[in-house]
Length: 231
Image (cartoon, rainbow, N blue to C red; front, side):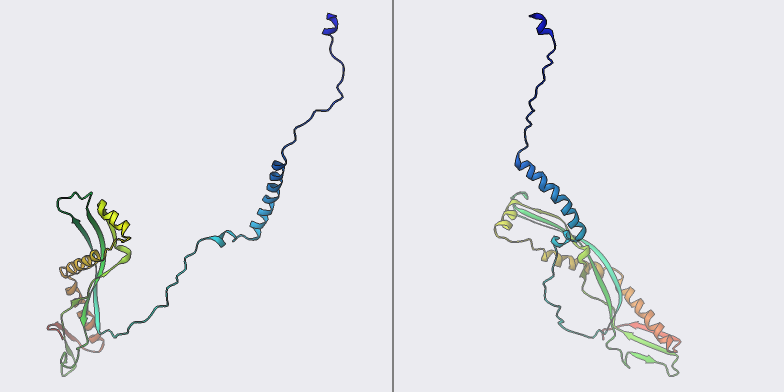
């Protein structure tokens, strides 16, 4: 009996192994993916700009520009100065910490100022030529400064600190920050800076050079340009 147990089992099994079939949902998903990938690749090749169709676009819906007025210019822009100022304004509430109530704004402003010479009054009483047409004298008003013009590309708020009260008020009242007073103060500072510079002197020198060159091209050998009372 023991010998029979040690002999190898030479009997064959004629049955078949049963394999577990994958779920039908998985097969359907794989098949759909296999179909979608080549089809999607073909569509991408046929329509390379398809993704650009849904890209966000910016549309300017403003009205056409309107011409407000036309005017003749009788002033010679003889010089232009570029100036920069830093405006630092703080508004606080007495006896209350700035963290709770207060506001501080710092504006870095860049602006341009033109120096002008009025040529509208030039006439026989302001232009005197010698009898032999060899000398001429121009009498002009002194140069003046035009109001400063802020450069929006180079003017920006570089610092802003607001207390809790100001922040809550802005949110509850839907009141955005208004920096109009800050920009007006920056413009006034630019005007003051320009007045303290030599911009008007440079403008008068440039005007003198321009008129001298013009008169000499007309045959005058001696040219004198003086700046006196306004026209």
